[in-house]
Each structure stands twice: as structure tokens, then as C-alpha cells.
Length: 280
Length: 123
Image 1 (spheres, chains in turn orange, green):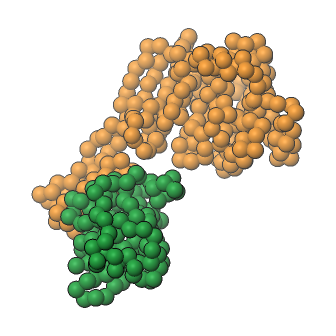
Image 2 (cartoon, helix red, strand yellow; image 1 turned 180 degrees about the vertical axis):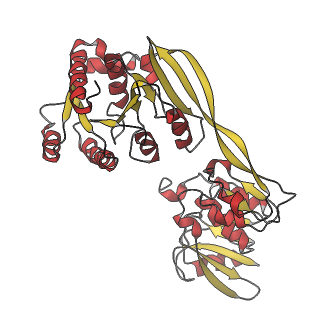
Image 3 (cartoon, one colour; image 1 turned 90 degrees about the vertical axis):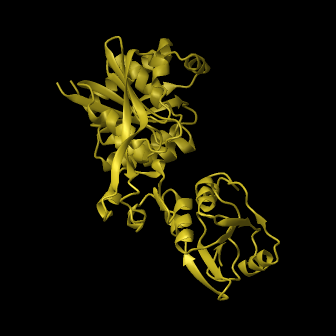
């Protein structure tokens, strides 16, 4: 049995990616992987146990000033402004470095070696037999991609739900690289639709099978969203109702599927997921 | 002594650019020779670390004084460690700013401003 990774993304933030990913993980008996490493919050709801930590490190240039002749070739080559020539010293701005190592290739005196620098951690635990993983970027770090890459290098066998970061930037792209299908979560608002369109462009670029889940559903004001999806020939996998009760449950860190109407909504979504992805 | 002004255009009568890392041009005035020249700011188009890229250009030109609106922490610390003085001015034509500097009317910046100011968050 191999790994089947389904990414959950949205474009707009706050549409309910984590709500969908955590509730569906329990219903589909899937592993949960939180790839929103800048603010992973899935563990608040799933509460996994027996968590093991592994550090994520990147390689950063270390300049040997005894060999350095201050020619400045490394600073000119660096595309990320991570190196600076003060004419007395070469300074390394570690947080700007993308570990591309171009500096060491152009260095004539072989003055540049690399040292590891911790930028985050991978936490792996379990909840009732299901594997829960997440990446956590260290506070103050700017680049999430190294953490996401390490998190997804070896995904567990079986069905995995990848809870993406919002947006369509490097962080979402790095997660989608490992996905074989996508669930797009949106809401009936102008912003929801605007950002959903960007997310749709992205999953189409990756040529992934996908469907849309509409959260905070409001029959009176949601027609424009259905019309758009219908026109694009995109399958709506289900609707999640908009209720104060859900917000209360959520704010206590509990799963919304403890409310019967939500359990029913997720059951319907789970069965229509089967039609789109055919994992059985 | 070389004086660098962050400028919105290429000429001395263009206004001072209040951003350092994301300014459009540097006008560099050589007070001994009485001449000036203009450089495009390489930091303007960089994805990140604009202040660092701009500061590298300033140091490569052997500038001793920078006049701008404010300066972020990375660039400011680089200026300080290289012994370059930084002065603040209002958004006026660069020729006028230079005149004020020569009369000793500009104030020296003694601490860094917030980062990412030139990206629109500071306005």
C-alpha cells in the first residue's frame, strides 16, 4: 500500500481548511499532516499523543576570514541579499539565506563552508491509531519551505490529508507538489470567491483532481458561488452550515462534528470525496 | 566627501525618496569635486533584504553620509558598523535637501525605524 496525499487548500484564510481536514481525517480514518507551519493549529482539535520531535535544519554559509580576500564575489552572486561586504568583513544575514550554495561555487579562495542552523521542528504523534504530523516554524524565521519539504519527504502509507497554508504562495505550492488530489474550501463571500479562483488556477497547473467544499453556507447569499462553479464545471463536494453553535464548539477546541448537523454534512462530503478521488 | 541622497527620480530637482531600501535612485554628490551622479537602487527590485542590497551599494561607492526619510534595522546597523552617518529629511527636492544639509539643518538619525516601512505598511 502506498501513500495517497490529498491537499486541503483555500486561497483565502479562515475559510475552514483545518476544520475540514481534522473532521474528515477522523471520518475517513486518514492521517492528518498540518503543513501550515507558520501557524499550525490542527493539533488543538485532534489532540494527538506520544509526540516525537525532530529538528529541521538548513545549511548556512560560514566564512573563514583567514582565507577570505574580501573580493565580494559571493555578495554579488547571492540572489537573496544574505551576504554583505563591509570591506573589513563578510557578514552573513542568516535568515535571508536560501541555502543555494552559489556563494561557495564562486569563492576563489574556498573560504566558504556550511554549518547547520535550526529553523523549525517536525512533530509526529498519533490519535486512535491515526498518524498526526505537523511542522512548526521557529518564531522569527522567515522561510517555511524547508520545514514543509522535510515534513512531506516521507509521508505515511495510506490516506493522508495535508492541511495547507492559506494563499497560493511557495508554502501552498511546496505542499501541492506532494499531493495527488485537492479539496478546496471556500465561503460564500466576494473574498472567498476571489481567492478560490487563484487556488483553482494553482491546482489546475498541477493537473490534480479536485472538488470544492463550501463552508459557512448560506442559501440566500451563496448562489453566485454555485453559479461560478457550475460554469467552470467544478464539482461541489458538499456544504457546511453556518451556525453560532459551531463557533462555540470550535472556540473550545472541540470538533464540530460533535454537532449532529455537522456530522451529517461531513458524512456527505466524505462519500462524495470517494467519487472524485476513487481511492478504494 | 560623498553624500548619497535617496531620490524618486534621476535629477537633483526630483524629490527625496523617504524610503531607503526601496528608493528608486541614489544621487551621489561628491563635495570635493562638486559633481553628482545617479545610480539605480538594486534593492528596489529585490524579493527580500532590500535594505541590505541598497546598503551594499552605498558602501561600494565609498559614501560617508546618507540622507533619506528613515532606515530599517538591517541597513541602519550596516551603516553604523561602517561608520556612515545617516541624516533624515522631509520629502523635498534633493537640491534643497543638500542645501539644508550643508547649512547643518538636518538631524542625524540615531536609531533604526521599523522594518518593511518602504513596502507600504508604514504609511
